[in-house]
Amino acid sequence: MKVYDSDVKYWAMAARDVGAAERNLLPLINNQFGDMVTYFKQGISGGAQLRFKSPNGTKVIYVFGFEDASRWKVVLGGTLGGGFIDEANIASMDFIREYFGRLVTIDNPYTCMTLNPDDPEKEIYKEYINKCRPLENIEIPDTIAREQETCIANENWRYWHFTFKDNPLMTQDKIDRAMRTFVEGTIYYITKILGLRAKSIDLIFGQLSQDVIITKEQAKKYKYARFVSAIDTSYSNKTDDTIVWGFGGITTDGIYVRLNEMVANNRDKKTILIGKKAYSTPFAASDVCEIAHAFLEKNNKEWGFARDIIIDGPATVQEYDKMKRANGWLNHGVNANSIKSHVKVIDRCIFVNSWLAQGKYKIINTCKEHIHELENYSFVKGMPEDSNNHTIDEASYEWIPYRDKVGI
Image 1: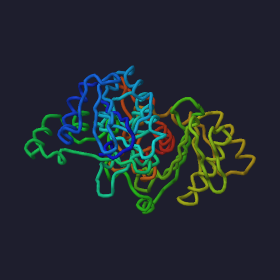
Image 2: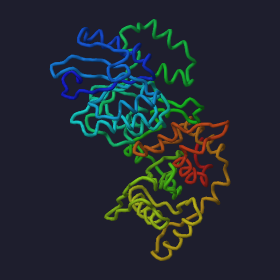
Image 3: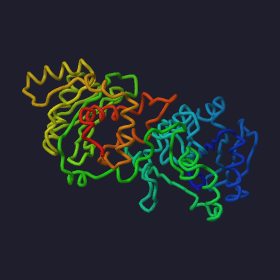
Image 4: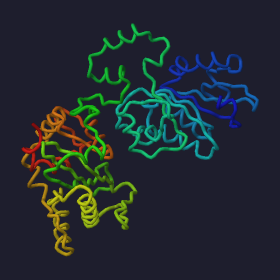
């Protein structure tokens, strides 16, 4: 109906290939609009297309496969009113970005995309899908809602999540049969049955249970034996590596609580405002140290005093010590190299997994990056991957010196 009502003549319909579009999409259109739509396997201007009769004239809907770069580059050479992309999660990002670029000069463009659950680290989620939001009466899984909260919402972009219950053809018997088809906990069960995003490799921690993620109000009810803080640094402006400032607490009954965090990447444009002072990327070591001090001051007032701040990176440690002496800061900078060598990465994973199972690892719900990393950290070739781990590494610097105080 968006095409029907629009004044724009040209639109797009894309699937993996033309055959997939013919199988999955054309029958739905024919059933809905009948004789108003005519399909041409080879259109007048080349390639498959639909001709759609409307009160505003005949509309042309180009039908093509996004795997055929030569074809979609021709279609996207002009301005479009919008379109439909089937299984957008498997499309190349070159196509997706170019497609959205064709819409910027159009008033009220319209796009509908279908997606099957996939790796949440895919760029399409971060750049487009996680900027969508559900309508108020639409429920979506908590894990997906948390991923959406990591991105700023784009006004009028909507997200719909469908399950077996939304399919009128799926009786309870068929649903039960489908659930018995896959082994619970496997990638196929998570994506095909639960309809959740997941990597097709072994997750180390998996999806966090609801009792792990708590509110600030809940965290304030604990009695804390000590507070801990750390920094994980990366000054590159060419990678996804991040700078992480973290603050945590260890309770009197052995619970590690992730209380606060800040995350920045020198590649991205970002400004951090602490108090009345703003810091903008790219950050140098002196910026990181100033931010760390202001971050600590804020958390010291809200939660309690963290004597030491564990810092990854000798140059940053030296800069912190110099600024500490010059400004009379109270928090003592400690080189993370003297900490992290005590516990191997695989052993850190074992510690955290056991604490999660015991209910001894909690995270305040505003620490979104830590939640995201824990739910996506994976084994690669039998060892923990060297990505999705910046807040995980930083948090481990906090608790490694006190690991005998956490857990049962």
